[in-house]
Length: 369
Ligand code: NAD
Image 1 (cartoon, rainbow, N blue to C red):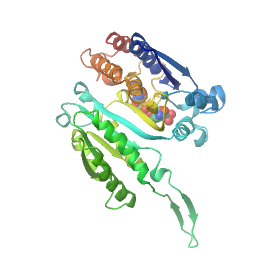
Image 2 (image 1 turned 90 degrees about the horizontal axis):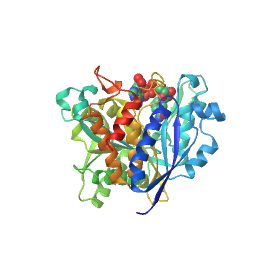
Image 3 (image 1 turned 30 degrees about the vertical axis):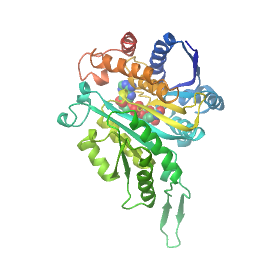
Image 4 (image 1 turned 180 degrees about the vertical axis):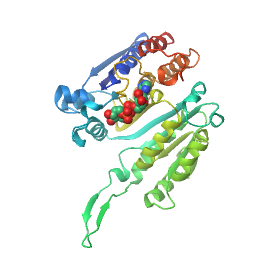
């Protein structure tokens, strides 16, 4: 058996972050060690915890630890303690955005997964999602109107005030996010990509649609469709499972991914990956893996947080940064069996039924591995 070493940075952050991170690390150990895979995880401060310990939300030594790793497993940051800091120093803004920038994390992958047994967690009518939801949102994360220059606010001679944002995309940027979408679709049963744009109004979207149409010729096994973003937002609530993988630019993805999260029910179940442009020492994407939810200060320290999103984020790390698809699937199956067949659930997905602690959830997931 060849000895592989998975080198990753562990940034638990604040609130429930450290609690659920412990569960993810225990799960990784349980699946990797028997396979002769060594885990070399290095802890680093981030967010409010880093402000308290080191004076800033993303200390240089945390960046160095991440740069020396093949992936980042991230918890969540923020909480009431740091809410009165100036906006630019607050944990989320001062830690996550610079991390995205430092590692050029251009591809945000969010599975929208709702098990049929949990459909009551969704605000959608049961008959629309009888068999659960299983779709993936791929959002471009470093381009578009959020980052385009120039940006300005100008006092005009006529006394009015004008603000300007610039929406800009290069063909190469569009192609690299499309590649992530098509490759993701290849790993799935339906093998469909829906490209979401606003090509009836925006020039960047005209380029987006043209590029997607051309790019799809490289993937004859994948069916490509296009939707305008306003229609996509409607279709997502009308019949989410008509999608398989959908891919879109930064701002549209920001909105649609949150819409998707809410129709999938609890934030405690949703994982995400943000992949960088660089390759790691495994020849795979360097990536940051984190739950979709925040630090949940309302339940922090109570041993009741749902660790599944963090555990599923660790599974995504195995898949995308370390190429260990079979082990990722093993973890995903164990989580699913725990929640569905085992009916072992934390409060957020118990719907008033019996709920268990984070510790019990951990033990039950480990038992099924
Ligand atoms: P939140 O996601 O932390 O919490 C929203 C609701 O979902 C809360 O009721 C919470 O208890 C519940 N929830 C979230 N994750 C859960 C889990 N694993 N198990 C059970 N319940 C869970 O969002 P918020 O309350 O708006 O924000 C709280 C803090 O988190 C803020 O400081 C915010 O800035 C920060 N935040 C951080 C990130 C990040 O680190 N990426 C993302 C979002 C919010």
